[in-house]
Image 1 (cartoon, rainbow, N blue to C red):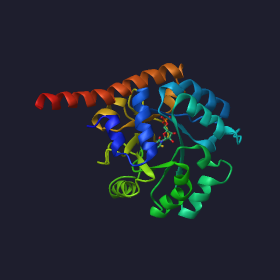
Image 2 (cartoon, protein in one colour):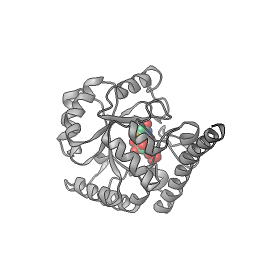
Image 3 (cartoon, rainbow, N blue to C red):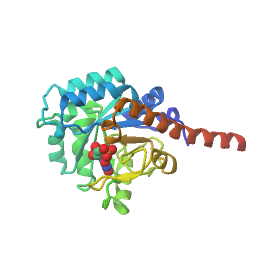
Image 4 (tube, rainbow, N blue to C red):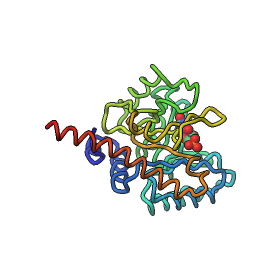
Length: 265
Ligand code: S5P
């Protein structure tokens, strides 16, 4: 297993290099999903949790009081705390349509989100459509290879296709939403949602695994945690607990293997 700073060399996308670097510098592989319907609450939580995270994940279309200055407010916070902004838009249409959804409409996502994601159902034209808008701005795309929800159809050959598509567009795709490490390219990043301190489910099909299961056994890179943090009695304290556990898990695995390697060498 390679250290984050070694993986920087393998990353093709400049944002992947930046993410590896800031994860290492901030000692965090925690992405927080702030799924609130209030813009003020989104900004307040982003400011509070900013020091603990490498990525802030948003769902801009659930905000009931969206105003067009949200993007610049989020970018100010991203600069202050050094995290990337990931708008979880899950694009899934033909190239022409996704390019408009990404650049235009109410939200002008390309203006403020470093990262977006997409389903691969439409095929490579979707990647080209998003890339046309995002690449000149230095943005990056995450492809959805697997999902955390019960009964997902994103498995088997679908997942394999997602990995192949991503790996063949590494100038714009920097990783995957996945339940485990799937790509053998060390520059590609795996992001895993469905994480809590205890395993379980919610009432609508979300499945949760533990930090140790996701980062240890399944070798993912970044955990995406929502309600476990945002609905906690003390979100900052919970984010700190999760960040430390996740970082230890990520790092101890690396340390174990390097110790074994150096003993063998
Ligand atoms: O497969 C997925 C992909 C994503 S991006 N499963 C998910 O849960 N997500 C997102 O991660 C979801 O939209 C939500 O924003 C977050 C999980 O939130 P939690 O509250 O269940 O931790």
